[in-house]
Amino acid sequence: MSAIAAGTAARGLSKDELAARVARDIPRGAFVNLGIGLPTRISNYLTPDSGVMLHTENGMLGMGPEAHGDAVDLDLINAGKVPVTELPGASYFHHADSFAMMRGGHLDICVLGAYQVSARGDLANWHTGRPGDIPAVGGAMDLALGAKETFVMMNLLSRDGVPKLVPDCTYPLTGLRCVSRVYTDLAVFLIGDEGVAVRDLFGCTFGELADLLELTLLDRTGRQGSQ
Amino acid sequence: MVSILESLAAAVAGIPDGATVMIGGFGTAGQPVELIDALVRSGATGLTVVSNNAGNGDAGLAALIGAGRVRKMVCSFPRQADSWHFDKKYRDGEIELELVPQGNLAERIRATGAGIGAFYTPTGYGTLLAEGKEVRQIEGRDYVLEYPLRADYALVKAHRADELGNLVYRKTARNFGPIMAAAATTTVVQVQDVVPAGALDPEIIVTPCIYVDRIVRVPAPAQAPEPAGAGQ
Image (cartoon, rainbow over all chains, first blue to last red):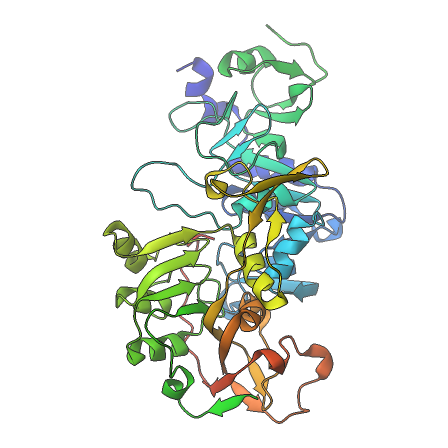
């Protein structure tokens, strides 16, 4: 394990800092779906005046924060089955409409967690592929392809220190060439026709990052690399 | 013409062994727990069930699976923190699973109600869940051919019906109700109350009565609390 892998927790962004970083990049008035798990935190950093409207694939636009106490209504839940609230201007629709909205390219941004992302933007986030694991896909494959832009938010390294941004995914795929941007604790990566570019670095240098990954990286940070 | 039935047993009467049954709900929101309990009591077995999940906790769909009545599950997200009845049957090889991406599941159900023979969808292309399926490139994009899912019966929970069978739902409990109602030969709906024709504003009716065959009133349906983070 490299020195940076061992020191990730100390050096990179925390989960909340990362969520705030993604939130900053979401344009005013965008229609957005935040995946279950880590991406859900982004909603804590979207201010009401941003005009961002959240979609939840179980059939709602205009989803508000988690519900607590008397506000809990078990008919009003998000895709993670957590009770939520509705904001003024919210709407409800059935599942086929909800996924048509997604598949039809009407959502601006979807942010998902991942096991792996490949250098081409392939996504693996639904199944470990391990024998004995019961597979469950939910809306992952629809979400990966449905929005105009799919962002991934994840730690760059697994708990074992293994990079999750890889030349080719080894986990079963969710979608091909669907991820355009990867937000991680150590860097923000842009994935395009020219390859994988590094836009932001958090607590590490371009050279350290390049040493960590088995990828050719383009430096788009606008600062001097330190290789 | 809709029948308004006095008992849950009458509402699920005639569902034969081996039937394909769609069951509405996303987790427990919109799950017709009382109709499922009646289905368990009816003794019907060897069922193919189409539903987003494969049961939560010990009630409703989980009880139907636990009682060994389900031969095959067609769903998008079987494994959850509280899907132990399904998990056991699956690991013991006692239940077959057809795993379908959620949007394809919804569209395959919708296609039946809309009389669509099959459709090309980008979802799942190049993945394990599209293996062996016909693919086609249309205007530079890759698609997978998917076929409709039909059912003999649909069990649906709505909020309110009028006496003709027009339905309105509550919030995200709407989920699969409208499309399942249109995809089954016989659609059975539990509602909290039944109002006279004309008492529902025609502008807000979600499921028109043409899709509804049987209504039963369940004034105070069970709503088991969901554990947080139970999955999709």
